[in-house]
Image (tube, rainbow, N blue to C red; front, side, top):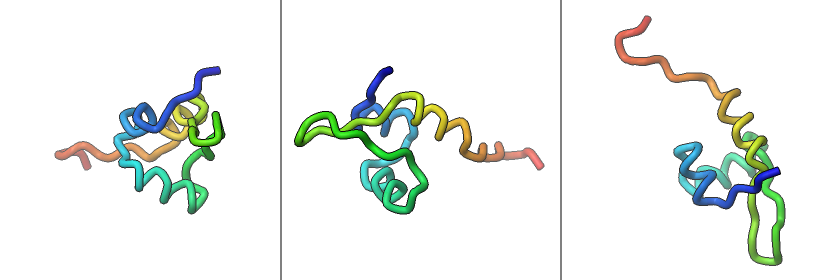
Length: 63
């Protein structure tokens, strides 16, 4: 089980730190796990699953 830190989650999702935490507050993003007193991370599989469930944006020119 791999744990991702915030920079990795941000890179994978394309979301900023503030957007990730805003989605967590509204229950729309996987909860973080506490690693140490000052460090958090996310289970890689939870983040991948969240990405796969997101609606795909329609490409320009497609109807």
